Image (cartoon, rainbow, N blue to C red; front, side):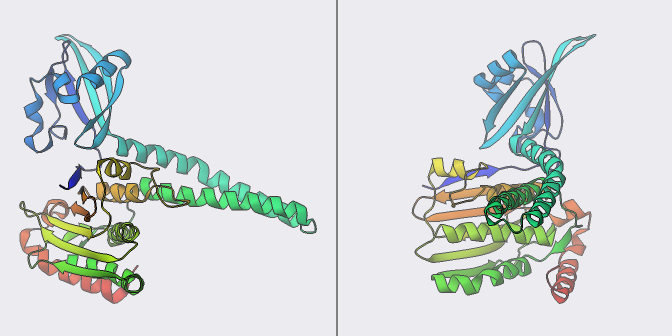
Length: 343
């Protein structure tokens, strides 16, 4: 039986707000609250907060004013703020996905450290010139420079998680997106005994996205799939529509697959299995999908492989284009992109 993890991602402000009375009964919620999944936020009204967030999270919230809890494999940070109103006492509970909080923290760290780190590297380079005739001293300066460069690479990885897209989105044809990613890997995979196939259904929908970021997502996911197939196998890149008419792209492999514990580790940062890895690969994918208001789903069966599915909003929903604008604009946009090459 396969294992699935569904990472539901809303637009960029993923905070949900619940208003509870003195008995912690929900009396109001914002329309964007995603704690009720597809049932709608108003279904939460009248329920006890205990039933929504669980008894352990509620006890922690009552004791400390903050807590964390898991819902559908997503970890949320909860903060409760009390208010005394003329009509009575209420609390406002703010729920934010842990990944969103992580992105904010990483953004602050990158901002604060990047310039000082560059300054330290420049100072070390000046010191190397001063001790150029002292081989024993240069051993130490080279070690310092190596560590600075390692930290610089870490900051670059963190910045990929934290920074929003700086390039305006385009209407992308999924067959071109997948073929572009496949072209990067085919020569190497042929030598490893791994087949790479692209399958696009006739009704696959256009994607409204930053083409560079979507390519980075596919490159990260294909690289992960290759690592899962040291003895060879098959990777399939798919594009289709889901039952609600939303575009979906998938990366499917026939590798080792994951059990429940491995899948949970894969969804958390700092869980790299590669020597020297920083464990931010899937976190970067998650962040990019979040920026595109998408949904990331992992399904895996031990010994049979893993499928990563990304569901995007419809082009009309995000771009404001009418239904008649979809396929024609998609073809024109991608034709221009292919002529210019990868930007």
